[in-house]
Amino acid sequence: MKAIYLVKKGAASSAFEFREVAKPVPAEDEVVIKVEYTGLNFADTLARKGMYRDAPPMPCVLGYDVSGTIESVGSKVDTLKPGDRVTSFTHFGGYAEYAVTKAMGAVKIPNELDGAAATALTTQFGTAYYCAAETTTLHEGDKVLIHAAAGGVGTALVQFALYKKCIVFATAGSDEKIEILKKAGVQYPINYRKENYIDIIKQNTKGKGVDVIFESLGGKYFKDGLKLLNSGGRIICIGAAEMSNSSSIFHQIKTGLAFGIYHPAQFIIPSKSIIGVNMLRISEDKPMVLKRCLDGVMKLYNEGVFKPFAGKIFPAAEIAKAHEFIESRASVGKVVIKW
Image 1: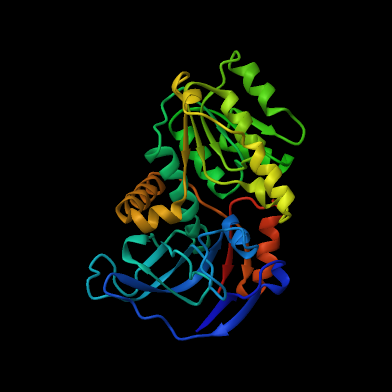
Image 2 (image 1 turned 45 degrees about the vertical axis):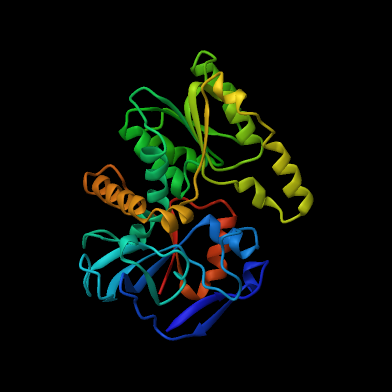
């Protein structure tokens, strides 16, 4: 089978190499999937740049999610069988024609669900579900700020927050993305390149701020977010995209310092919370939590709440172009490669 190996840090154009390798054999609790689509995630680009500490050492095969058909199952797997259509969290190894993963990380998908869109249900929608249904509880009328709201995780968070009848402030960086957010029903879509989201939130909350922030940018956005939290507010950190704008050590230090330095008393008195999320660690250490999230995602998909969609599909041979497209921040929805 073919697999795409990360062999060099840096530019996408020179980072990857296609190799012929043996088809994986499942362990007793694993399944092998004949991959139709491999999903790409922003974390892939960080791993390629050497900025994702959980990535395996090179040469390695990236890829956190795939969709396709079960090829074979381990001796103790009784929930899936060969021929089942699935989408799966792969914990690396997804950039290949066949991928092996724990059976708990795979979930059946209906025949009518497009395979490209289905890849979003694991990493993106699974992350959103964990953030919004496991780490916190959203209530009707809660004021919620979602950064990068037209991206993969952002789209899922928007859909979930609106389902919970929250008042949503959502940021994005283009008029096209703002139109998408408006059509989704977002009450306050904000083009952060043209408008001051902090002022808009203060004006529309009578200065009280928001109850929950889903923060994926880091740096000053995190620091500003803490100031925007109302009493009892929570900020759920799911990334630090600002760190990836440059590989310069000086940029990393500057962005890191922009987070600020804090003491627990600063959160006890106003009753505020910071919650960090890394779904890779959850999948490793809490497989039952991952399964609960995937089951919850599929339930909401079947109820029409979650509506994943593929933003752009690249042939597997164009993996470098797919990475460059994600880094351009022009993507909307899920970006995938097709085998």
